[in-house]
Image 1 (tube, one colour):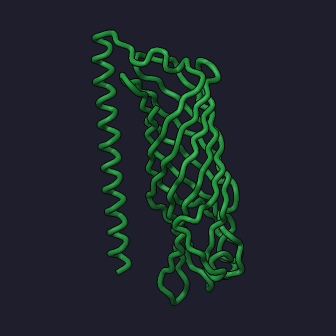
Image 2 (cartoon, helix red, strand yellow):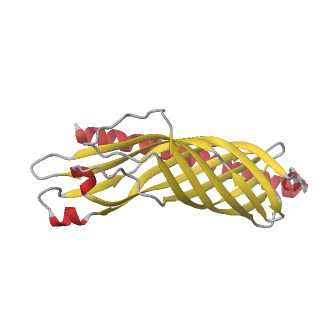
Image 3 (cartoon, helix red, strand yellow):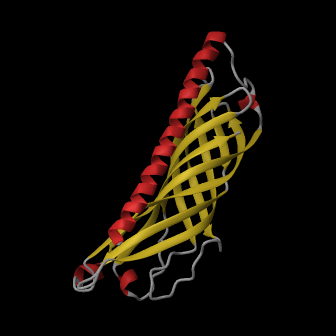
Length: 247
């Protein structure tokens, strides 16, 4: 039953990954085609778009969330209490809004608040027991503040990198109150964010495919005196997000 469930999860993730790849390929192919056609016609789409002081928009994203973990000395000193601890990542999704402020020709300040749906797993194996999975399911209200550094615009494309931080807090959606005997996630997080993307200028809007990496800086679990928390020394969130920004 467990193996069947794992195959089902793996199938869903692979399906989503293929759909996402096709989606990216479609837009990338369209952008290359549009770029070639624009070069032939010498048409520059939205030529004054980046000169505006402020921009607004929205984004849709898929994420892959897991934990970075270190086992505690308790687990090493008591091998009879726990054999192994392994974090497992799962896919989720995020949606939100874009508030972009122009700082100069090659720099913007960007606030991209959103709502993210995560599910992270920590799998334990104990002596004379089957695997036990602790599911950390949460809906987070997120507030990333990012510095966007842009390259020179080439035709209708432009590359950029981003770096900044993110504050997250749990909402009541999808939240299940867990008992102190279980592994519990904290309600807030602070993360380091960085990534890169491309601005693609179309006739009526700008599309920005982007990949962003997030590393949690605070302890991600409640240190309850139970067998799950005792086996951990560090547990920090780690997320990879592929998003599509529309402005």
